[in-house]
Amino acid sequence: MKLLVDSSSSLLLSLLLAQLPLFTSAVPAPYRRPNVVHELDRLANQTKNLRQITADLLKEHAFETDPEQHRFKSLPVMNNRASDINSLEMRPTLSQLHSDLKSFEHHFAWLSRASRKHHHPALPKLGQMISLIKSLTSMLEHQMVRVDAQRLSPPSPSLPPPPPSQFDVLQSSQELLLQFRLFCDWAQRVFSVLSTKSKMSAVQ
Image (cartoon, rainbow, N blue to C red; front, side, top):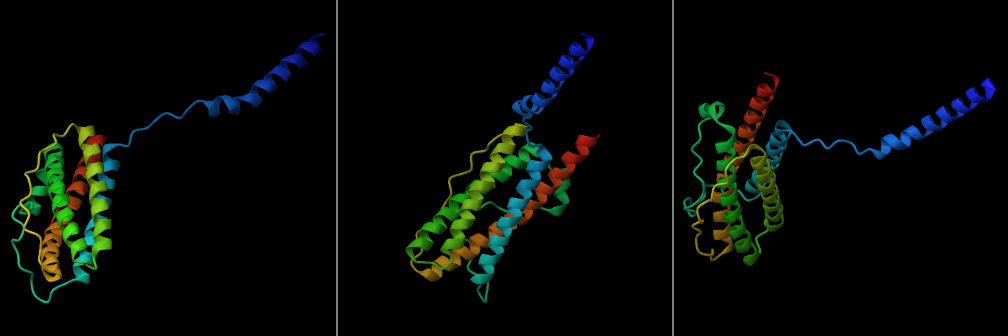
């Protein structure tokens, strides 16, 4: 009789062990929110990609001399100093970068319309660039929500009249791309520095 009980217990235990993988697989894995450092690194990489596209466009349609400047009166002013970067704070810095990025987005939308009208050869790559800008803006907005950064209202852009020729489109694109490359240089460094500072804060 004891042998029968032991055999039944062993059989029941074997059945339970066989079902264990089913029970564990049915339990959903805990959701892990991306941490701040990871998101800042993604922002830095996306900005790096944008900078490369900007450099490619400038190289493909370069002038022998510097293009005429000051067509765009409302572009963000890039007068940042490298010595200031380590003193930047997360929330106001993200807010300002977002405001500047939205301003560039409006200006590139204007350039895209002008390029389409004059059949500018850089239009496909310009469209890719605008898509990446929108993606970067969305990523940045998610990060701003995570750290409770204020969203600034960028001033309405003061855009020039439609360019009358393809040459004027090229002149405008050169000025805009040069300024945007400066922005990408700065933003990539800022995201990297903020990521490093967040890592240091996490281990303290």
